[in-house]
Length: 393
Image (cartoon, rainbow, N blue to C red):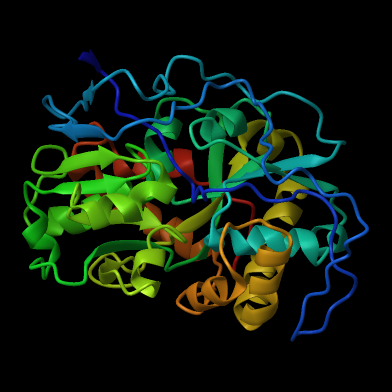
């Protein structure tokens, strides 16, 4: 076993078992349907762009107990050498001109619907933007945004706090929606509340990912130290359901579709999600934008975030059509009825102002999990994290 003085920053960012297409879009569609132009070029559904950051090997589950330790500075215990090197030492400023196609990364999750919609419904084009969306490996997405290889990506703000604190050149500009993170337990499990998870093995798709970050707050509220009193076990996202069925873990903490599928199949029940409890106001998805783009062309960044939020509103108003887009364009490795059922559980109410308001108290509480330096100044970090583009919605 080896140790590191920095916390892990792996993040599924809603990674799904299979990749999606990147190009092409529907002809004009009404509010009730999405029409796919099958003649337009489509990226290989199994191909991800190599952004220069090594990906985590897929193998047996890795157990993480007493993940973080120390007096306020998080330390990481890396078992088996299986995860990619933590993204701390190779942070570089963004690079490249802004008068080019913007590249936005995605992981293949149901909840990335606002991005898929803004692309396929040509909302980005309406705002004068040339946008490409790129299927991206989970471990590389934050470094890729920071280095300017990607101009943006969606993700829960908690999982971006430490990388930005450590100097990654990115900021968060707006929240997109809530509802895509869940804890599921077997149908016949004796576990009734989050408090029952003390000293139990919980499966996650990556150490430090969106679900682990968010539900660490619920664990904290239940009197559980998430860095000491939980046995976090890592599995590829599409294997979490099988691990739960085999009894290797007692709960899944994950994003959709992986967190919801066992429940929809009748094999699990939902213990909680990020629309419940004391932390329910937090966005599960926000827009992370490359810092150099923000500095050099804030008007382009503003248009990008505005169009992205419009995609969120459209998705909320057209759930069936959005599910059709995700399924037919193979963005998500799930059938359309499952995608539609999942989307119906979300709250699509994007806001830049409410994200800004959530950051400081969120950081103050998140520091108590042990994943941030306990000396972190919540006001200073929230100022560093938030990109003020003058958006008042």
